[in-house]
Image (tube, rainbow, N blue to C red):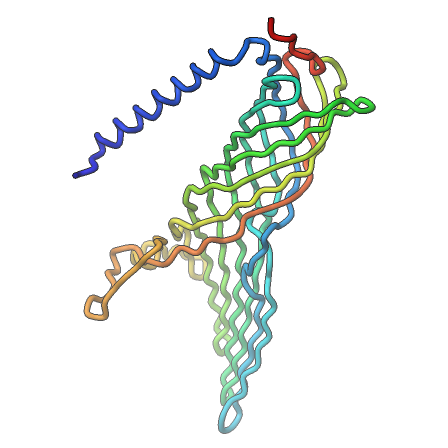
Length: 314
């Protein structure tokens, strides 16, 4: 049986129709008084790394040879963290379905922390001096969608506690990477500079929060919350977007295999078939930690009385 694009489109249409039917049935079955209140909220916060892993290593290496065998020394310092660490902003639409429970949809944007890694190499062999210094930076940017459910407690001294939990859909993930390598070979300096973009695959995670809101008026309030999300960044493609040598553009002089990498779960090859320079390089996908926990502050606007209790069913 062949699964064509037409079959796929038909299945998507069937899924959409069934989803709309389910929503219509749910709206019909729920009593009207349960749709008591619509809210829009937006906030900004900062997330710290959750589930940290090894990002890279700051490395210092030396090699010295005067006579006979040379001596090599090195020092490596691990850089640990999560690509999900950084500035987090969100916009949330929610509706209380009854007095204590509600549902909503959250859009969020992550501007991740920029990680920096440095490597240096010094070689002194028989009077020849060579040094190499590499600087790397990378940070993650992500657009996420999250359907959520809410629980809201009773007011206490003007504050209303709440909690929420949801499924995090990482719709768009990309990582910007920069490289700068400076080599000095017997007083001749060469500078290589690169910029690359890593696109991530669509994947899912979980998020949750607990906090409290304070109503400034019947419609406007403020809130503060602690949040966390458990997520990962799974690379899909790596593409070199800029490459210069001593300020001169050399990107067009590189082959496709040097400019693009495609990440897959399984790769294969043969020594009898050398890699095609006109095709992307294949590599195994390696999930990277992108979870975070942190604090967020924001504003909330109520379309209706935030303290209103739905009337009992007749």
